[in-house]
Amino acid sequence: MNILVTGAAGYIGSICSEVLLSRGHQVIALDNLQEGHRAAVPPAATFCQTDLAIRSQIEAVFSSHKFDAVMHFAGEALVAKSVREPSTFYAANVGCGVNLLDAMVRHGVNKFIFSSTAATYGEPEVVPIPEDHRKAPINPYGKSKLTFEQILGDYRAYTGLKYVTLRYFNAAGASVERGEAHREETHLIPRVLDTALGAIAQLDIFGFDYPTPDGSCVRDYIHVIDIADSHLRALEEIERVPGEAFNVGNSRGFSNLEVVKTAERITGRKIPHKLSPRRPGDPAVLVASNEKLKRALGWEAKHSSLEEILQSAWDWRRKFPKGYPE
Ligand code: UFG
Image (cartoon, rainbow, N blue to C red):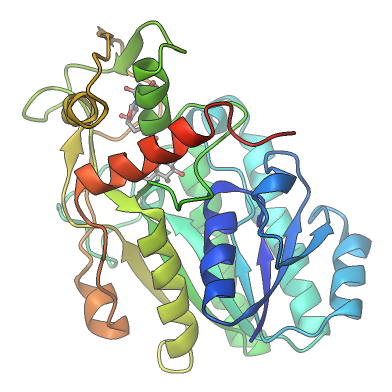
């Protein structure tokens, strides 16, 4: 298939592009390169530097290519930034998404896979979290993604859009060539590894008084290659499950302190850290129920252990200690 991948120079978009190409699909890779890295885009993809905020630029892409489906990874994704700058999140995650959907409608493209998030649930009432759990996001990031999920429902009703929403839990790990390299790195695993490498002198562990076994937050880490796989499954089954949302996680939670300990084992290095105040916008525990994804899409995680996830991230980090060349 001919697939338009937005955010294809970003962490998850670039690795999904790599996996799509390896399965014989053609990828038109779109990115504005604000956060993404040109070098992360697989060479076999056709790259378009396009800003989804500018409708004429999107129109140019749709006028010059034919697409069978769109995978929409582009967006703002940092919880802490969303608390500081909500308008950036509504513009990027809602406004730009609507621009993209309108281009799809104009050009008769009606298959869409949306990258959503565990942050749409807020503080869970039940763990592991099922997809029909109450949605009460506690930060603008989660609110912006939930709003777009609801907008997708309207497009389905009024335009016949067929879409699948994938709610990722904590994406982590790397392929051999591509990994996590944000310009402003706030994510736990890359910061843990940077501390192991000595680039960060002492890691802050945000929050030590959460209602969890060791007081630090608990997250469900999911290998980025398994996320890519969920996209392929969703695309293959979209006619059967249009309009459905699926959690993409391992159904196992690890505390921030457990991640540090496991990373010390994997890297063989000490990771100096200190307990610091909570970071605004962080729920205590986010762990997915992945039953629906397994049952309805036949998905199975192939890299589910935290050790394997950390090992792949560490291998990539050591191979590319400065991230991607600019
Ligand atoms: N953390 C630290 N120290 C750091 C960095 C992070 O203690 O230096 C903590 C955070 O406070 C949090 C945990 O590590 O408790 C995980 O934080 P991340 O920033 O790695 O990830 P988040 O859980 O905040 O968010 C990520 C993605 C979102 C996605 C969410 C779903 O950024 O896009 O996972 O769980 F929605």
